[in-house]
Length: 408
Image (cartoon, rainbow, N blue to C red; front, top):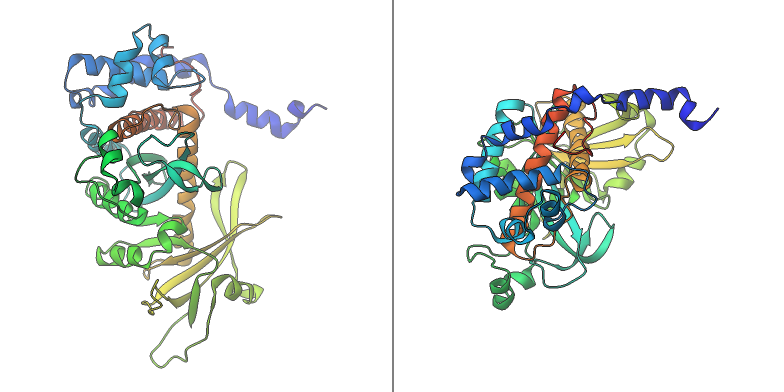
């Protein structure tokens, strides 16, 4: 029996099958989708180019940058390049309209706002914000740009909400490079977690949500967690395995004898098997997602060594031969542990959405160098990604054949 004849493979192929009827009219639906966004572009030519770029991003082009997109549409290259790289249109207005659209389609009071820093490797040093910094996609420090992205995760699906380029400190203080790449005067150096707060403040009023989630780049910042508490926002955030904690017990009480400080991974390894609880998080791409989790109440120390407030530690471990472990802190005191673990799990779906964005709509394929071009490109890419999310939902969650041409 060949690999493709195996029953499991046949089932996967059956799930992936998309008929011509499923994708027929995609161009018409894209044009209809864009009707609410086109008024955000100032001139008729810009509205035409927006459709051209979106069609190119949804096509089967191998590289979805401005030049091949222009050639695919049988248009001159330079107007398309200028539209994406330096066009005078308000991408913040487009993103605000996208968030309103997402709220209409997917509003969920238990939704999760997921913050995700994403690196884009670059070979040169002239592009805005390029520096040797951590690139999660490569898993190492390298020459790259880093953007902070915000995603909406609900039981129904995932949608992009916002983005901003991270400007390293050496760039923020370099007037010459700022001028060359047209960085607005109002933009100053901000740690990624401060950018994350701005994205939350900007998007929060548009979409209902119950949680904020993020990886350990956000969770390790005690000031970020404090800012979320001050805003009255419920969070579940990863922290590094070497985070120092003091276990206060499952039901901390006044006069509780303080335990010694220890690394969170060492604390977790010392817990008896009976403390771990088995949880099923629903169906995943490879079958039911099963994890084990345990929890307690803890204190941590901030960057200056000061003891912080009481927080909830939830350790999550996948059930697999090579298990993954996440150490998370939350301020949720009104939700049972399965709810905290479920909210945390939705973060990984948001990461998958952006991986799809890099592969399906060319999120990581661009040749712009300036601040405006970076945000224009990301805005158009996220708009295309949102259209794909709607197409997937229309087809009942199946793969809608997104690598095919948009003019079918």
